[in-house]
Amino acid sequence: MANWLTRTYRALTRSREGQYRPGPYVLSDGLISASAGRFLNFWQMGHSLQPYGERSAMVEACVSAYAQTVAMCPGDHWRKLPNGGRERVPGSALSRVIRRPNDYQSISDWLLNLTRRLYSHGEAFALAVRNNRGEIAELHLMRTGYALVAEDGSIFYDLGGNEVVERRFDLSAPIPARDVLHVRLHTPRHPLKGLSPILSTTLDLELAGAALSQQVTYYLNQARPSFMLETDQQLTGQQTRELRERWNEQTRGENAGGTPILAWGLKAKPVTGNADDGQLAEMLKMSEQNVALAFRIPLQILGIGSTPFASTEALMSSWKASGLGFALNHIEEAFGLLFRLQGMPDEYLEFDTKALLRSNFKEQIEGLARSVISGMHSSDEARNELDLPVTPGGHGAMPRVQQQVVPLSFGTEMKPTQPAPAPASSGQEENGDADDDRGIDAADLLRAADEIERRVPA
Image (cartoon, rainbow, N blue to C red):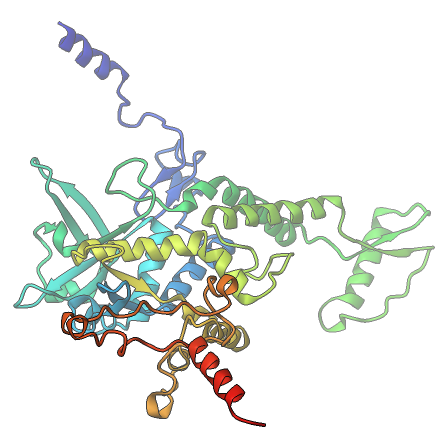
């Protein structure tokens, strides 16, 4: 009885096909606003599908900032050593793929399109092709992808949107998840369906789009003049038309820039922007700031911030601590899941962000110099960071510090800690030679020298 009532209640409350639902409506290739989604024939009423981010220069700038920055960072496969350090793994499948993902794309091109797809659509897909040894040898980006969950919980993918791959491989059957790189952002609706941060800026984009569309229509259709003619005299309609024609003859077309002669007390008054135009500019500025806030990008990265950072390193560090650091780590973890890495800190993929400071030579040199002085790096290690060879003879292989850097115990005892004497052997104790092999202290030598000086006559 209870089950029958539950099914009846769900049937009554379930949304029927064609019933209005609050927007915006997310589709595979874009979104439809709430006002347009109320009509089934929205395209016949002048509404169109809005592609993700293609209508806003601010969204384009944010997505391009992430895509181009991630593409600048080279990646390496790292493994932790027993002594606490780490080493590169040059011969692994990951190290080969992260340098050349396939035969028609460079790693920069591949990461650029992967990150761009990730932030514009909320998720990105890539097909993994394995060699005869079962290792991943190629990664191919796919424009479209859909996750399928089997009855037993197994995950498969339906991929498409790559003309090269569709001619080389058969993609008609579902592809298992072990052969698909799926990077996704926030998943509020489905654990395998990511959403872009662009959706959180829909109202801001709609506001800016409506304001700009209104201004474009106003300038195109109403043609706001740059001057107005005013007089205190009463003019007839015929006189007004004649004055307008004379003014246009001297200020339009081939006569643009001419000097019109005014009569009947006419005065030319320039038309300037009013308070409404200033409010429109402030509104558009606020909309751009909200978009940058949703993408977690400092405005200085986009070149529109008012308060500059002290240095380029401080600016990049601020971005790495927020949005950029998450983007790099998120893509790294997706690679680790596909290649079955152990994860941090044992085995992982890491994108090198030092390439972002490549053009800031002064700060890079100052940082390496301080590291060498403090003993954190040897001079050879610092030279390798600048792609310079090591010093001849191996003199720069050992980290160095200044002579006054001593242990804390030296401040109380006023001398370095002496190592404990080695224990005497049993044979020496039996023969009474233990005292002869005892180490001579420096104070004993000084006392012996004073005794000899006293015995020698002056």
